[in-house]
Amino acid sequence: MQPMHHIISTREYTKEMFDEILELAEKLEPIAKGEVQSKVMDGKILALLFFEPSTRTRMSFETAMLRLGGQFINMGAVEASSIAKGESLSDTIRVVSQYADAVVLRHPREGAALMASECASTPIINAGDGAGHHPTQTLLDLYTIKRESHLDNLNIALAGDLKYGRTIHSLCYALSRYHAKINLVSPPELRLPDRIVDDLRKRNIDVTITTDMEDVIEDIDILYMTRIQRERFPDPAEFNRVSNSMRITRELIQTAKPEMKIMHPLPRVNEISFDVDDTEHAAYFKQAFYGVPVRMAILCKVLGMEDRIREMK
Amino acid sequence: MANESTDKNSDKHGDKNNLRIKAIENGTVIDHITPGQALNVLNILRVGANFTNTVSIVMNAGGSRGDKDVVKIEGRELTEKEVNAISLISPKATVNIIRDFEVVQKGKIETPDSVCGIVKCINPNCITNSSEPIETRFVVTENEKKKTLALRCVFCESVLTEDLIQFIE
Image (cartoon, rainbow over all chains, first blue to last red; front, top):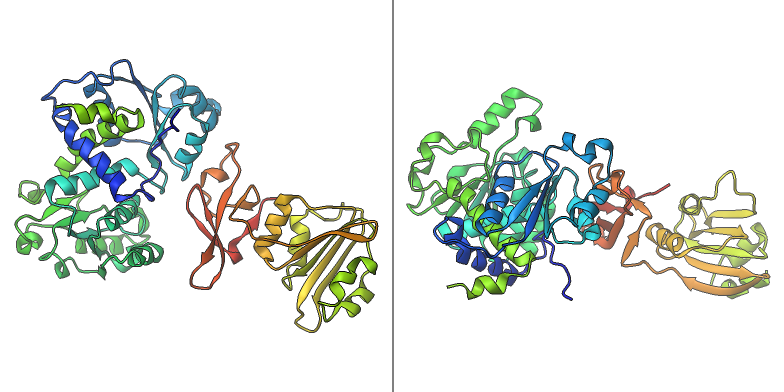
């Protein structure tokens, strides 16, 4: 019997492991769009356990399962579940993993998904564990870059809150597998943690650090923007100053390459002005869609159906 | 002090130390403890006010700053978990097991590759700091800037440098 395939973190993923998921996702895109019907997951059930709010991640997993012909069960609101009676996460996982063929888990505590994988009888997919990992977001970010730009010889700017953003941290490690040139653009107080910069440089990644978007805008292939959270700044005036300095506007992107794409994990607040949405640069809504084929690929991978997908015409 | 005779030749302060501490009949001598760590070793072994056997402590043996601390405990042998914990704060310590005044086992402590259920994670939001029935687990690594020991939490990836290591009570 093969060991269970959980998706907990992409930190130790090799380029080949990333490529396998990305290739599966590409195969699955027509099914994700509803252009081709599939029953590959017929009879399979996916359990969704979300201990924190989610729109895109939860709904794209639901869509992925339905498009593949499977079904899902949902714990619903925490207040209406056994958690409200004080049940531990490990007990919940032991029970629910017997009801379904795989479990998607989002939990506010770091390490929750790894712990869950050690007590589950079916594969666990981490849909975010506190400030820890969000591997399915990382995979869909890579897929978006591949589809909308290119992964080899990539010149990317990561901008906004680089200190606390878990999607940024995971993406940095993933991009290092493709030897991307990484430009870090943030206010000094939200710089990428030194340990990650050190790790990247140890992997011979060309990393530049700046506070000014204009320093990099002309040269980059991808601008990956993240939201700066108000609660990180005790002083509202300081928050306004910082968030305005990081804002992407039509004026700012005038000097960008025509093929430069802007990504954002969403939700955005005001860090990308609305008039950027209808430019050729905006890729953030497509990025949200790519969550569906990528999560389909992940489901196929954990349930051992990747060969069936590869054989599809 | 026949039981510590093996230590005498290698320890330039051996004779002086032996005058300070009586031999033990059965128990453990933890020698070559990093100076200043003897009390932390007792904490790891949960030797406190309720412990009724004889415990001898030498701190800063061999001078004003000292080479080492030594702890001798009557009637007590160490578990693997305790030895692993001591290795984190005093990697050069040796553990001698004494039976009938004889050293029956003498060994250097080896720092393990990982430690379970000994150290508390510093991250309050780590799953190991919740009410879940789960042991802490750390990979032993190196603080590259200071070239000292560091621990990385397997669950949340927080890195604990030596000064941040807190043992589970």
